Each structure stands twice: as C-alpha cells, then as structure tokens.
Amino acid sequence: MNEAIRNLEPKALWNKFADLNAVPRPSKKEERVIAFMKDFGQQLGLSVHEDEVGNVIIKKPATSGMEDRKAIVMQSHLDMVHQKNADTDFDFDTQGIEMYVDGDWVRANGTTLGADNGLGVATIMAILESTDIKHPAIEALFTIDEETGMTGAMGLKGGLLDGEILLNLDTEEDDEIDIGCAGGVDVTAKRNYTEEDVPENSVGYTITVKGLNGGHSGMDIAKGLGNANKIMNRLLFDGFENFGLQVAEINGGSLRNAIPRESSTRVVISQIFEEAFEFDIVQLVNDIKDEFSTMEPNLEVVIEKTDLPAKVMELGIQEGLTRALYAAHNGVYRMSADMEDLVETSNNIARVIVKNGEIHIGCLTRSSVETAKFDLANALRSTFELIGCEVTLSGSYPGWTPNVESPILEVLKEIYEKQNGEKPAVVACHAGLECGLLGTHYPDMDMISFGPTIKGAHSPDERASISSAQKYWKFVLEILENIPARN
Image (cartoon, rainbow, N blue to C red; front, side, top):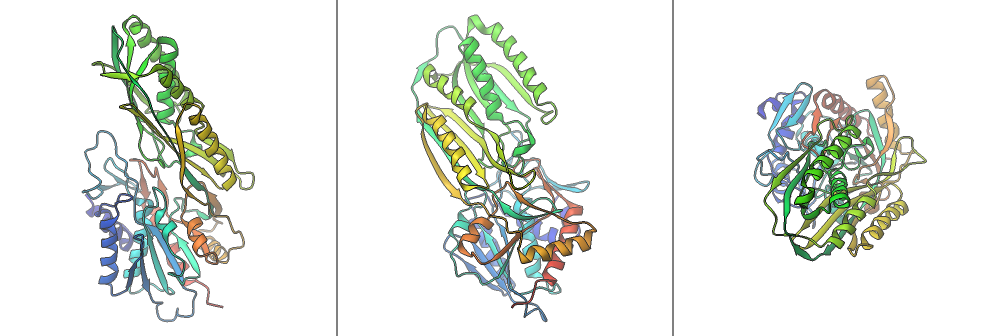
C-alpha cells in the first residue's frame, strides 16, 4: 500500500515521509522516532545531538558557495495526533500508518495520516540527505510532544542553536505564509459524585453520537462543525428536563486539540416515560440534524435499549453537570480586530468522561491575545467551579506576535510571487505553532512558517495534496538558494 506513495513526485520528500510513517510516534511516546531520527543523522555522518527533553538537533554545513549565507534552523515536530474511526482496528503504539493514493490526495486507512507535521519532518530529512541541493548551514530541529503540550519547544534551552532564521514547516495551506499564531491553555475540571442505585421500573438506553467531521480545534474551529460533547449534552439535558433521565456513564471526545467526533452515554428512564422519551428524542435528533445538515451531513445518533447499568449519578450533580456543559463556551469566542478573518479566541470542549463516581472535563482554550486567553479560561473555570469542580489551568504556552517587517518574510513573498504569478496570503493562524515558545528562547531569531496543503488534520479524514507537495517542494528549494548573506 505504501509503495504507491514512494513513487510520487518529489520522490525525495515522499520516500522520507513513508520511512517516517513506518515508525509509531504518538505524543509523549516518541522514544522510537527519536532513535530513528538520531540514527538517520548518524548514518549521514552529521552532527547529532539529543537535548535533555528529547528534541533532536542535526547540523549540516553549507554547500559549496553558500558559506557566507545566514545559518538557518529548519524545524518540525516528530509526534502526530492519533485518531481513528471507531470501526478501524489499529494500534498506534505498534503499527506504522497505512497510506494510499486517492486522486490528488494521500490518505490513511481509517486513521490520521501524520502529514501534520510528518511532511515537514520529511522535507528536512530529504534536504539533510541530499547531495545536490544548494543550502546555507542548516540546523535541523526536530521537537517532541508538540500536539499535547509543546513540551519539546518549551524545554529547549537557549544557546543550542546558532541560526539567525527559523523556517517552521508546520502550516497547512500552500498559498499562505504565517507570521503569527495563537497560544493555548488546558482547562481541566474534575469532581467526584455519589452513585445511586437504579430506580425500580427503569429502562436502560445507550445513546451514541457519531459521524461528525471532527478536525483541528484551532484551524477548523470557525467552520461551524459539530461538537459531539455539546450535542450529547443537549440530548441529556432535554431527557432530564422532560422525563427525569438519569446518567450512568458518558464517554465523549478524545484529544484536547481535536474537535470531538463521537460521544456515547448510558442512561435510564422510568418505564412510564419510555414511549414518550423515544418519540421526543427522535424529534430532537431530527432538529439537530437539520441544523447541522450543511456542515455535518453524516451526523448520526443511535438510540438503543440495553441492560440496566449497576448505578447512576446522583440527580443534583447530574443536573449541575448538564447545565454547566450547556453554559460552557465552545467554538469561536472573539474574532481578531487586527487581522481580517482571524479567530482571536476560542475554546474546544474536547473530553467529557463520567464514570465510577468521577467527572472529568477537558478543554483547550486558544487565543492570540494572552489576556483574552486567560479571560475565557477563567470564564470556563468559574462555570465548572459553580458545580463543585476542582479546576486547573495547565500547559499554557504563548502565542507568536506577528512581525510584518520580518526580513525573511520579504524573501518568501518575492519567491512565491515569482513562482506562482500572484501574491501569497500573509496570515496569522489560530493553531499553536512552536514559534511562540522558540521565540522566548531565541528572541532575535527571524521566524516564518509555511507548508503544503493538508486538510482534516487531527481527524481520520486527514489528507495531503500531492500537487501541493510538488509546489511546496519547489518553493523550499528556492528559499534555500536565496537565504541572505550574513551582515
């Protein structure tokens, strides 16, 4: 299956991507890909260094005639988001990604593809391995754990890198050049609750929300996509208000940086409301489907009778939980006043778990304005504290402030317009790029971010454009040839 990928052009890029995707590389479990990358650099006879947190730095001297150019840092992250369809049998800890060609797209078989940020990593690998690509002195920086906390970029020490320019290869539209990004903070709410016996004369149901698109909780947050946790809560709220529905378990969403695609819950209803409940919930589901018909045509809600659970939530806590989840903000909170069409602040209610007397709610709040990030985080915190949750704010990382006077930006704009006959879009994105953190360690480094077109990142619909990869590769090569001379 992956052999078809190796025959795509540019072969240097796609072969390295296939090599990389054969290595399991979940966030926080990067030992194998770190070893793979170190071995790769050592086999080339290059200088290889692993820092104290697991980032890998490989240094390659300038090619002949390029010794007077500014040294550059080429940077991408080694880890990938692991998401799969519920009916896909796949073990991310042991298996390599199974890829296939679908027209102009490379896709994975029921899982995330790892193009985010594997195509960036593969690009750097191909350049390190090359013998005929002109380039200045390169420091290849491969960071770890970008997707679940940016701990690699956070833990990088100053003084390890000498480059004056950083090329971050982690954006997903080939006609855009990024000069800024959002920061983020994890908002986690937890509390215990009392479990009660199931009332007599009850009927058990399992409700499953599925078929949603999901996607990147930053880049896709403004698309109006469905959030499985919010949709499920709407059903539970209605069932409790009208029929005294009681919750036994909830399991919704997965990763904080992925818009939740699925949620499942076990509930009970009194037998006297059975017929009315089934009629009412079908009507509500149809209304929700109508609301999301444009963006979520495959939304499905399955309601099945099941055996009764052993226990249910205490009703007072359940009522507070459903009201808090209803009140908690999800989606775009504020658009930027400074950059057109840029989301400034947002939140993703990513994970809701209710089981065995414990509630766990996980959110990722993003903003390009640090004060606004904590304003929304504190609003969420207050909402969940009102129902007795202990709320923690953790994993905060800064945004990257745009620099419209960036010298390397002018180089990239000129090359892009010459190659494509039009100007690129100079943007800031609502994703978390590592440039913000790297800039705290290397404040004088001139930074830019760009990449090939990738759609559906952080979901099993992730796909990479083949024609865009060709366009991007040509762009990269000319950038390397045109890095300015040292002052």
